[in-house]
Image (tube, rainbow, N blue to C red; front, side, top):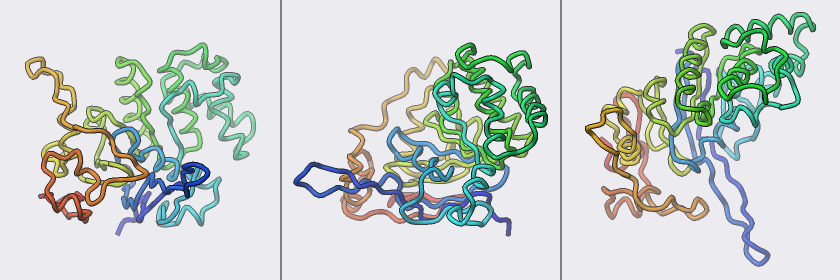
Length: 317
């Protein structure tokens, strides 16, 4: 059996939230019992509303924060038992805003070479060659090697961020909304670049997004997250053809379509996002679910196996 490049087993992250001098701290569950496997070479997407726990999960995958409980494995080896430098070499991030993730006082050459310097890899001449190779790979002219982030467009800055992530030759890229801060015309260029680089370097992507149109274009498998938990995880084809969980269906109903005859999509998700400190009992989605029953209001649904994944819903088929 092939060992997945990334494996999450019942991963939970909680925080103690102060509520004042005379009240005990409350517990906020940012990620609650997430189990996923990411196969080598695939694009595994994670979607959900803001506040659902996607970025917290990404930080745990990068080793920036530790899970409260559960286990994350890289090629079968727990991250907790892996050297931090080795985790950084194997898994690299591409963040949402390329301007805030790049030091404005450093040149492109310095920014791309920074991981090599931090890990003491190669001589100065070797680093210079690898930086030039990365510029070529991401489609930036070599004349920009001495430029600063403030002299570049948003798309060019994101290409620098991608080059910096790739210079360590990682196995996995954690892409946290990598195009949402860019113009629509530039987004397509960056997405196409990511797919080209995936084929060229044999990469695995864990792709976090709220844009389902992007996910449909890129992903092999999709996990849908709501209030810190995975409510559905399936192949892209199955999810977009026939989503099983009401939350997944509602997200798909909100997607804009290029067909002008269909008009604007309905706002299929009603009600406010629940308070994560005091989540609803039973199924946490039931206050916003048009199909909720009395049973949904009192009993948390177990994962229901599907042909190519699962959905945590009493009504899943």
